[in-house]
Image (cartoon, rainbow, N blue to C red; front, side, top):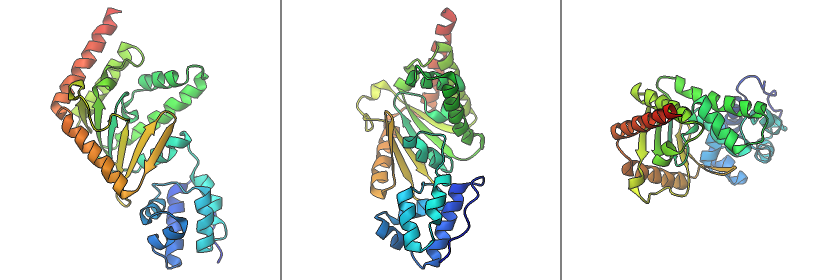
Length: 280
């Protein structure tokens, strides 16, 4: 059967590709589970492809074309849909983050990306790539600040972060840089835009000592979890795995200071950094 016309890459190719997949699947009389079985993926994964929260990789696209008889349409167009300014290990998570309705994140070492100021982000990337050209650092910072623009919407996504106290105490850039970033966070809290808790050193051993964690919920697709390490990351969609990560986050929130206590601590640490900067 002839496939649809190629997608226009200038207009949300991921969302368009997902809509075309849903249309082709329904025309073939298949449920999400029935399409997923020969691909060895879950029905929820197919749902995430159709909603645009997951990227369609070339090997999956090729098999979809074979199963649905779409004459190479999905293989051709998945390349345009997968173009990203982010590293491969994070690209899919960044794109899901942009359409999430709720984001919950535990940050063990650094202020979370969505809450970083330009100066803080620049210091982070320079530490990661000390010999990179300034143009490369500029591009990385621009991409990070672009992600943070999701917070310009007054209501969505709901962002709830648990910051390890280490993320507050670690000096990234100058004392003035950290002070400014912590004040940026307190402003977002005062404007009721984010929920923030601090996991204090006094909490001792906790449920996520092995790394960072991001949970994302969506209107029309199952929740996802993202776990990350140095130059690597993994997006999880298995419901049982996501549920385990959700329990981990709940345990972290239970061990953390209350939002009001957390705000007071963040403001206090910001003042300490500002005072230190004045001494220089």
